[in-house]
Amino acid sequence: MPRQREEDIDWYVQMSDRLERRERRRKWIALGICVSLPLVLMGGFLLYIVGDKYHVWDKLKDAVHSQRVEAPEPIKEAPVGPVSVESFHKGDIKFAQLDSQDLVTSITHYFRELLPEGASVFTVVRDTDEHGTVLIYRLRNVGTGETYEVPDVEARKVGDGWALTEEGWKKVRDDLQVKMRVRLAMPTL
Image (cartoon, rainbow, N blue to C red; front, side):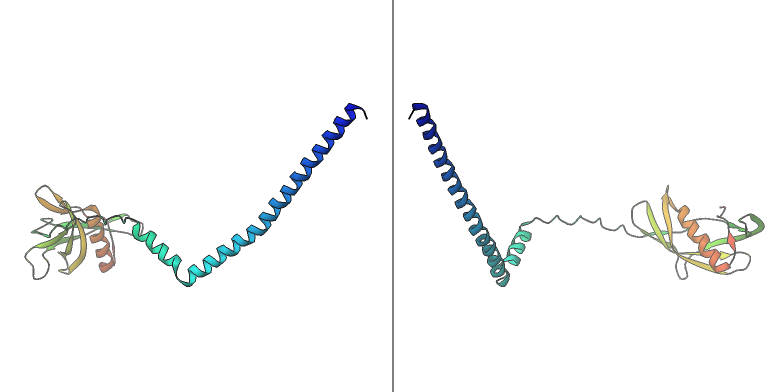
């Protein structure tokens, strides 16, 4: 047999051996995966069942939550105390009556401030140094003598005194409209 042919045969034999060994390794790897995967899954399932039975998962959750640092609650400022106010407006408070198309009519309703019944001052409950709510704002209709009480009217500090805010006057107007059953414009002070 020629030498070249012997070398070719040797090469072929060596290559066949390598391929057979590689094929055997692949089979063992595939067999290992096929056997170990169900074992791992079954072990995980058993671990879950045992952990659930003995409440291991709840204990772990509690341990994790107890290690968390809770943010402290924000410090609330102490409420500002109430203040006594003798008057918000001196003189007449005029509310012009409106017609059905919100046009001003010739009818004007005049009111005067009255202190709350049994009190010598208005009480403003402050939420800040500059802002608060009048507990009861009381008015008397000059023409009819009827008195009207409006609770929780917004007020603010102006200079040394206190005055009703625009929202406060809107609340007074809306309350008077309901009680008098007429439409009113914002007051002229």
